[in-house]
Amino acid sequence: MPSDVTALIDFDSLLSPQERLIQQTVRRFVAERVRPRIADWYEQGVSPQELASELGQLGLLGMHLQGYGCAGTSAVEYGLACLELEAGDSGLRSFVSVQGSLSMYSIWKYGSEEQKQEWLPRLATGERLGCFGLTEPDFGSNPAGMRTRAVRAGEDWMLSGSKMWITNGSIADIATVWARTEDGIAGFLVPKGTPGFTSRDVGHKLSLRASTTSELAFDEVRLPDSARLPLARGLSGPLGCLNEARFGIIFGALGAARDCLDSTLDYAGSRVQFDKPIAGFQLTQAKLADMSVELYKGLLLALHLGRLKDAGTIRPEQISVGKLNNVREAIAIARTCRTILGGSGITLEYPALRHANNLESVLTYEGTVEVHQLAIGQALTGLSAYR
Image (cartoon, rainbow, N blue to C red; front, top):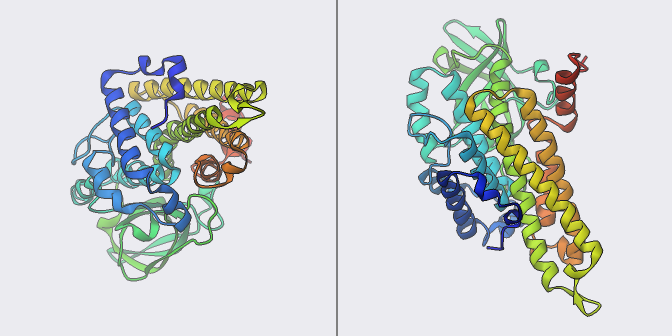
């Protein structure tokens, strides 16, 4: 593993021994099980779902949830795990994030005791995989406009509609699907293989290639009332899940940025031009210094928000601050690292362009830049600019 650029500000001194242990454990897993193969997975467009059981054995699936076989870690510990996973690849962090913060969290937060007992222990071990169906082909940033509907059919429900850009969609054993009902938005658990439920993978992707992205279709899918998440009420249900996932991104994006910086520092120290390493040139050092400072600021912001989340005081607009800033700076760092790497930077031998491509998706999902800007603007002014 390359040296860690965060050592300059002694970031580890801000962490507890338990937090450092979890971060080091996940970093070691990524170094041993992900880095040797990620370039091939990315090039071939293969999701590393074969790692699911190992991720479960490490306690990383739903790790911040309590009970039902989940590790029950703190928010900061979960964030640090996301950071190390995304240092490997955004697709890997997305896999874990969707499993734990969207699929499992939706059941843990809004499900019945029977639903929790049936699904959470198996999702925590990686024996079963989950996905989260909210975004639709025509409604992403405005989930209130969703067209997927569930109507009563005696004691059952009939679900019809479609969902788009669903991570883990075609490989999931259970899908949390949000639909409009006569009483408002409701969530349903739809097992794989239910008649009328089909999926199709999105192909020709230039981003998140080491991740499964799918379209889900529901053609008069009959579900018993026991499939409904009984504690979900309106849009607050899915939006609460999204805040969980966004929190992991605040840390995760910085892992991609750090990986770019670490590998670029190594390259710049050995790449010789005009009879000396390019790391010795002022323009290169200016880039490295500016990128490092942005990484450090992002880390301090992420840690502060993690402490707020552990204290139970974090607010959605604060999560928007972290997601907006840290992903935006991470993608800028990845792109600038590519310039230092020169022609080598366009190959999969170095991670910068792979991370930059992945971060294009991270910049969009779980709330676009514009959505988070407006959320922050509303918090500052008291005025909504959405309509």
